[in-house]
Image 1 (cartoon, rainbow, N blue to C red):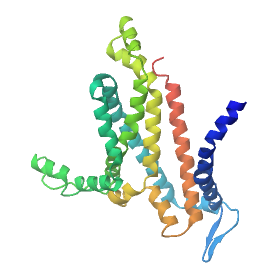
Image 2 (image 1 turned 120 degrees about the vertical axis):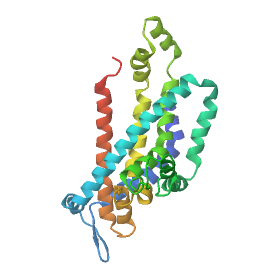
Image 3 (image 1 turned 90 degrees about the vertical axis):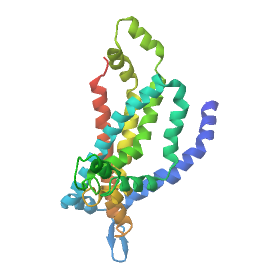
Length: 282
């Protein structure tokens, strides 16, 4: 009992920090979502009008749907691209692990806006991709669909978020003992079978974590769609930001945020449930 109390005392600064700067703001926004905006401020009442407004205007549902789809596509691409990289770092290039991980971490320290603007230039009408295609004589005129479209948003988000999927997948792979691979080989399993029967099932936690990280961050992003998405790549984060900033309609912005959060949590739990019922490797 004394040890338990000691742990509580040691963790109390963390609990206080989370309550003050995480749970309290979330609770306040939740209360705001039931209020109404007036010309003089906010009407302190309890109403579902803000949530009803979301369903009454097809624009909000369409943007939320597109945001979740972009988040899902981004997360799937990130996981598929990250797994081979993490596998190679964990098992193939052990001597270069520190160097490769250092390079991956360096990308996280660079400015978020600089990376977005870099892709805006690369995907532009006179950007690197169009110039290469013209040089190879694959096209005669620059392609315009690369920029200001959902495709450009997904490409940019994948580039920005891929470290968040590589690291958890790599962490789960390093916890797999090489003895298990050797035991599988002794039992007659080839590399293909060993991967699907041993490696992949034991690394599902890293895949799940990487997917959740990239999906949540991609779905809630509003800077990238604003800079490279244009009107076609509009996402819900931009609308929520405008409600708090330009429109000063905090109650409706809060309701949009909570409704989107509900759908994100629902999607994440659905993904976890699907991973569980697949029973990979069993």
